[in-house]
Image (cartoon, rainbow, N blue to C red; front, side, top):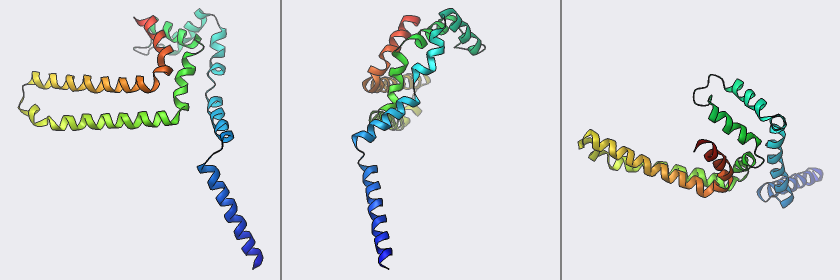
Length: 176
């Protein structure tokens, strides 16, 4: 009976210790999880074969892989993708979005709120839209769409602007 009591106490202690480690991870455990995320998304390792090749060979490979895809299979997009692959920072920065869980969660929550506000805005103006002409309904749709899209883009830039800046720079170089 006494042995059972000691085993029970040891099990309760181990459970409590495990619970404490899960709810309050130490800095060492946090560093290990960050390292695991970085190892999972080692962009340099994945893109090394493409970066070692000459640009013309990489572009030919991209053309072969993307052949028949409507928007992507064009010379401008191929050049953009090649530049993106060859850049040392752009894809690392974009993949860094995944590593910051708090920012990502806040971003998702705010986007859901913006979506719900858009739905409420639509419901509030439903009666007006039923009586309005086709032109006015179209105008209101595009007005609401542009405001909601602007807010979403603003939220994206606020949270992840630093992560997307290098990719945006490459994009503007090739498309504008």
